[in-house]
Length: 140
Image (cartoon, one colour):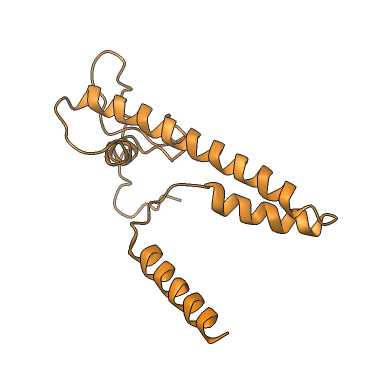
């Protein structure tokens, strides 16, 4: 009995150290997150925890696959704009998001915002500046 407790505590400590030492990436989903949520949902829905965990795991893997596919697409666009740029595809995708004011999950700029890199014949002209109000006038 004591050997079992020591082994369990040792294994739990080892797992805590290895999980804590890994690099955490800001990727959505994954089998563990979605699987755990699916298991809880399945358990609450008439005790189908295994079915819920399986469905959640599949959903999480699909979401992460779509995220990585989009990040690689953004990295490719970033490489076209910046030949010879170094870094991983995640770093390039983040740089593309910053330069083009896009949000993760979208390769088009957000409405009302213009991208930083605009050149060539397709560049959108800048909006005209409004004249400053004369002294004594208030602009509401």
